[in-house]
Image (cartoon, rainbow, N blue to C red; front, side, top):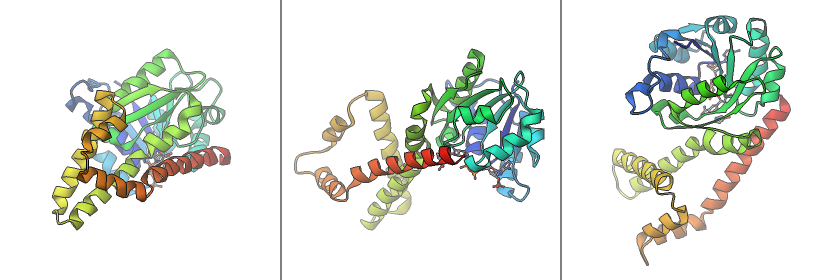
Length: 280
Ligand SMILES: NC(=O)C1=CN([C@@H]2O[C@H](COP(=O)(O)OP(=O)(O)OC[C@H]3O[C@@H](n4cnc5c(N)ncnc54)[C@H](OP(=O)(O)O)[C@@H]3O)[C@@H](O)[C@H]2O)C=CC1
Ligand SMILES: O=C(O)[C@@H]1CCC=N1
């Protein structure tokens, strides 16, 4: 049985913890009895009642002391904001054991070298970029093994992340654009879903139907790209009948600069990751 500790009990920590705990309900995702709520310890500020309630709801222990998270767990998930990483690692450094602990950091922009420098020599770390759909086993995660991480560490990381979606090992130079694409991407897609629904409501559709159809359409289109392996342009052409409604809609999207806007969003988000790394 794995003992998992979360430093930070916010949105990403909750998505991963709940995803691990419910993985068994999804075909092919089960971690067996590897992760149980009572074997998770999470830290956050005492006044953060939403985070406390969420982890207590999993049957987990919530503490306001990061050192006790380290003492109670073998796999440590660093899920605080990048600016808080140094504070947390300075606190737990005396309690960190390179033989016992594996640290998985999900912090945006914090590099493997930066993590390793803040921990004792020989520490085993993985830099991970997950996303919040891990909550419903539809996450897209990547990881970069640290210099001391073993094959066993990589297997365990891949197993945990695969239980909540896809997981692939990547080279670290890709981490910033990955953060901009799959880390932040759910937010962009939620805005698109909201806008699709707003448009349909404007045309007279009830709001609940609009969200139902918009979300299923995004899910369907994503599944088509993933499962048919067709070029998205070909799939777009298949929807676009001559002189039809889709062509009229696409013309309005191009006029509004949708492609440029999305490309620019990826550039801005990537730059923010790079700035964050430099500032640490
Ligand atoms: N949200 C997302 O979709 C993704 C986030 N990430 C990464 O995950 C990390 C967390 O982001 P997110 O979950 O969105 O942020 P949240 O603000 O939701 O969570 C941060 C958590 O850290 C806690 N915290 C703050 N200071 C400390 C401390 N000194 N010791 C222990 N816990 C502390 C906060 O508690 P309190 O609120 O009480 O201050 C809060 O529970 C970031 O580094 C981000 O880059 C990565 C991929 C996707
Ligand atoms: O917004 C952020 O900084 C984090 C990283 C990726 C998603 N959320």
